[in-house]
Length: 65
Image (cartoon, rainbow, N blue to C red; front, side, top):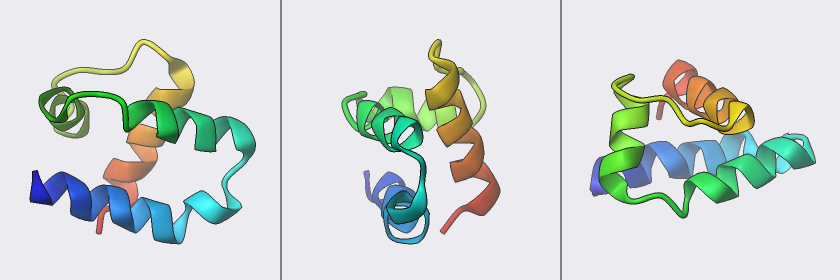
């Protein structure tokens, strides 16, 4: 899904390099999710069970592309 790629790429370029290790690991774990689940997270229809992944989703929805 192209829209997801744009949001994830923006985070990867702008935030990932300086993110703490725990946040980088949470982001990497999110990449293992299926696109429909990631979209549900980003649309606020679901939240990840993992609090660190939920923090990454919150950052993604705050900053956007």
